Length: 267
Image 1 (cartoon, rainbow, N blue to C red):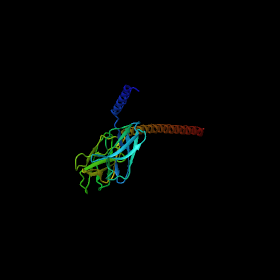
Image 2: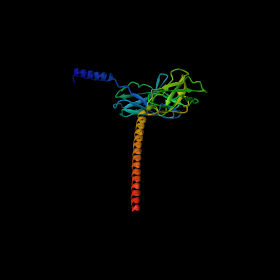
Image 3: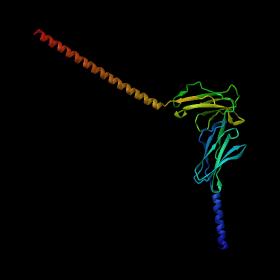
Image 4: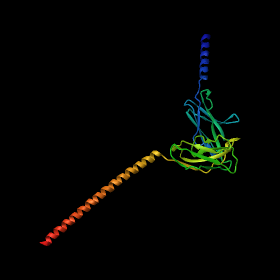
């Protein structure tokens, strides 16, 4: 091969690698398949979604601005699942993931905040409203503790994998939800924690159940009840008319029979 051809080949390889290095990989998405509010010694399933061409995923825990790789998963797949068992104060924190395609890593995902609960006494969750709501309504909660002076409070719905609601103001445990829909129905619990340890929460409060009625179903049931009531009323009227007709025919036949008997007797 001529020196000139070798030069062109090296240049082509260099340009190809440069273009590949500049390829922007989509940022992965991290989510919790189970609730990120984890009781002490419990577990949480974390999903990292990348691209089908990714052959390696890794999950890291961010603490003190440092990434600590927790686990890696090999295999060409669009999504990788990680399971964190035996949750404690060391494993609670902000989790991020990334994937690798050929020689390049993607950027880190946005953090998923995983908290551990059960480290302090439980607070009390209450509401001064009826827990039965109609769609479009609002409800307020109060979370308080007589035993521990918490600087922050959070509210979570049982079984929900999304992030809990946080009270932005310190030492305030007031929450307002709404406008609500049927998806808001369920059991709610609140937690207390300290600003210095945002991933270490108290034991959960007792559950407070919220019921959001389905107005469309109620209207349908009411319409059906009205229709059934009207049908029953019509049936009752028909029965009354038939009874009166039968009774009038019976009286008429009786009078005819008495008249006939009287005529025969007179003869």
